[in-house]
Amino acid sequence: MADMKSIQADARERMGKAIEALESNLSVLRTGRANPGILKKVIVDYYGSTMPIDQVASITTPDARTLVITPWDRGALGPIEKAIRDSDLGLNPNNKGDTIFISLPMLTEERRKDLVKNAKNYAEDARIAVRNIRKHALDEVKKVEGVGDDEIKRGEAEVQKITDEFIARVDSTFHKKEQEILG
Image (cartoon, rainbow, N blue to C red; front, side):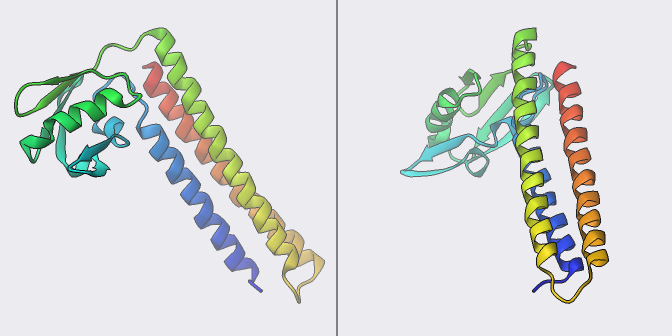
């Protein structure tokens, strides 16, 4: 059986991972500014194996509206271009022979609202994950043997305090991304 401190530490660690997952999901949402992170989930089929785009090329942002992808092997240009086109990012790569340029168009108001909606869904998923972790932690607190009811109540209160802290972090992360998208 675990003690109260280890249950709380485990809950805190797992809730932290939920926040990391949220930040990872939000990083791929396009905000109107060029950000190499939007290509993070693009997978390139290269010589029969699939790998993330950042393992076959470098991605730079020379200005606020352009991404430049320079493959380490020129043979990867075609597969990289195809992977970007096939992704659901709505980007149109422009092959210049040894590099690929992607010009990011201005986001329309409708597209911005869709992105905020997606961000809101990611935030809600993170809140649900945090609540599930809280439920698990509360169940564990109730199973601790050799402690009185007062100690169990304190443990439950501490788990709730941790949960409130992480829910606030989810909300803060979402609102920051929302402002970034709405510009």
